[in-house]
Length: 290
Image (cartoon, rainbow, N blue to C red; front, side, top):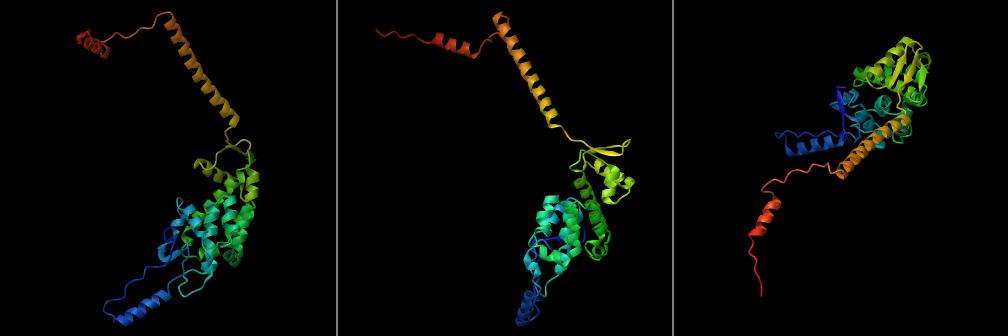
């Protein structure tokens, strides 16, 4: 997103009144600005900034956590309220569906006491979250097709395609997670898609490294690529056993060489430390005490 950025404290910095105004008028102008200051909405956006940075892939999860941290103070209406409470639920739901796992979606969206009043104002958003949480992907995707409400948001509209695409990818990953293999036709039926469309979406995920699987084109089956823990354990055991065997053979060979006096010792270098100590001892005068 490139039209706004989320901030932790949304109070704008007040500008100084012009110096040519009298002191009384400057004081009254400052007090009017303080009265009209917007309420503090953690994780929300300020006008004129760029909240759509959340749609960028590297920032979506940060945006989702920030939007779901909104507090109950957002329900307080005031003259400086720059975002309706009904819209507060829109951003955490869309970004959360694109980034959160099922457990995070339940804890940070569905069971979020601070966010629940806003979801009650937008029942269709709550229905979408519940559909994806309950693995009713066909229902959730059909509800997302009615994007009129999403497209009316001036900040979210330019980026809704990228976010919906991420939501679909997250849904495929969630659906396939418990399976070792699954038919592409069954997956397509669960999502309400054509089989060729599902195959193309799966190929994209595999190519991006987001899905560890392979497609059996002959059988039309998606097969997971999972490492067998037993195979890995045996492999590590064989590697460690080989290292121990090499050390044992080397130690046995050295012992045999020493037993047969075949160990070649390096020649003592003249002027070494021992030679210097012996020379100093020889040069010492011997004093006999009667």
